[in-house]
Amino acid sequence: MRLEEKKKQAFFAVIIAMCFLMYSCASLAREKQLHVYLTDRARYVLLPHGVIEKPMDSSQFISASYGGKDYYFNAWVRADETGMDMSLFNELGASMADLSYRDDHINFSSQVFPKNLRPEYIVADFQLCFYDPILLRRALEDCGLTLEIKGSSRRILSGKKLIMEIEKTPNAVRLVNHLRGYTYTLTGES
Image 1 (spheres, rainbow, N blue to C red):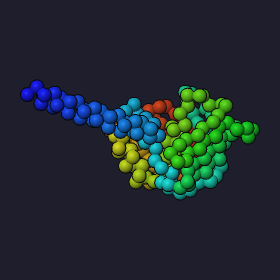
Image 2 (image 1 turned 45 degrees about the vertical axis):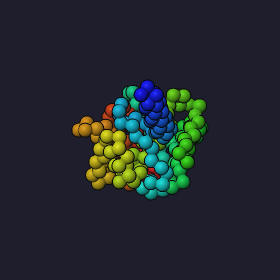
Image 3 (image 1 turned 180 degrees about the vertical axis):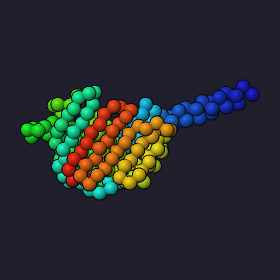
Image 4 (image 1 turned 30 degrees about the vertical axis):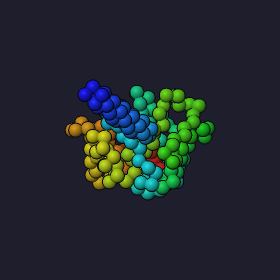
């Protein structure tokens, strides 16, 4: 009987080890997905490139407000089914940053923006403004949030709490992040 018990224990130990390994691999794959936290708990996984509502290749004027300060810069944005490229310039035309999102990888370089700035948040905000609302709704539901669409406005809620508002007009898009306390407006062709 002792031998049988040892075999059972060994069998269960192997099963537990296999479950642990499978769980570890699954969580590693999940962590490797590009994501941001739209709230402290809502983990939004970035959508693939091909789900933009309409391709964009245009200059944009960006005005932003955060922490009681206003910021202004220009951008050239190219986004289509192959990816997204964004170049940011100051008012004199000097480069401030370059961002590229292709093949589930983000490249970001800047001598101006803080080193701890995660470019995934820039891509996420862009997606929330310009990506297909049906796929956005699914992605937001997957992380426990709700997307409401009324005409040209989008609202993202956590339960009944308003997290973000996005208002689109023919020549401008305004995003207000109530939770994180920032606002920005893109003006140009969109």
